[in-house]
Length: 441
Image (cartoon, rainbow, N blue to C red; front, side, top):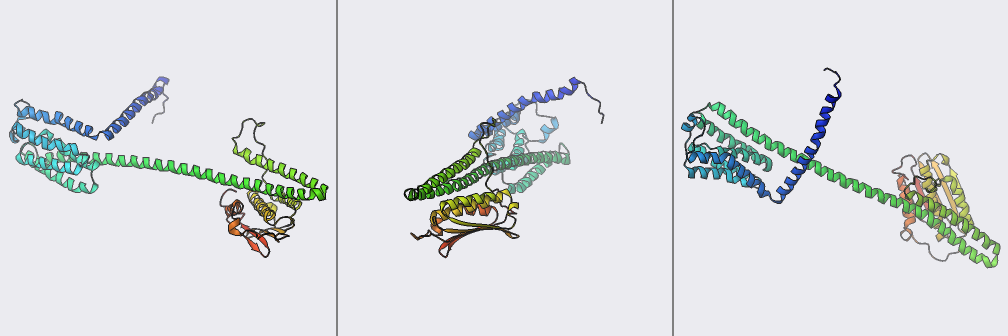
């Protein structure tokens, strides 16, 4: 292939031609859509138009010839075939053309009627231009009919065309006539099948596009639901924990205000610190929900997520609220992934909050976090309330957002969580797989 560079005018000519075809193709496409919509609304219009065109193109010349107008092909053809009167010609033409009105609604019936009239006509030895209706009916059957009807239809067409070739053998070669007729029938059949397959492919593509759109919407809704669940867990962990601490400190401060004012003042300071910390975490969660701003001075203030190092501060706050927390770790906890550390922190936070809420001040809590080869274990066990006032709610009653959130965080890392009474207290135990998370924390 030669690679001689073209001049600017020559190289831009094809692009200009393609660009000029764009609006034409768009207009043709719009016109095709309008025609399809109109056909769906009034299908009889297209069928009537086809019949009218066949009559004007193929039936009218035969009627003029039957009426005495000259011009019906070579002289030898006029001698071979029977010349029908006008009434006979009209009757056969009607039998061939009128069934085409049902070629889409009942293609098998239309094809059968046309074939029967076609065989009758050639049995009489008459030749009509309206015989084109047989090929139109075959095309319509291949396009709109049932596929299992095509074999017998092809057999009927082949038999009818053999009859035509036999009748025409006095004027032309039998094999030439048969070859031409079978080629025409094959073309009509192939065209119908091609259009049918193309329509099926387009329908499949449209159906697939619709399914993909539905799946995309479902994925979007699932993502929104997952994000809502994640935010709900974070909000519950932040607000529920800190409010429980604040309420406990407020009750203790109100009790100690009259007996030991300095203890009441200390409780107020702790309430203020807890409230400010809760407000900061709340702003962080709400900040990431807003759209990121281009101006760094107006964007949300972001802080690191809690990790295992923050559990010491969490235990100190719980001790200040009245719990006796004993915390120990086993294994290399600092090597855990940040997502695992956040999940561990939230589980411990929720378990301690439930202990403070239900067991109250004075309860003793043993908190243990162990990292082993087979996974990570969190165990939070309390001794129950120091003064028994009422029965602690059972697992079914306590199955609120707290336990649900802990179970979801545990399930994210392929683990399990159990919570229930142990002796006079309560035990929460979670087992996680920090290596193979099932999803994002």
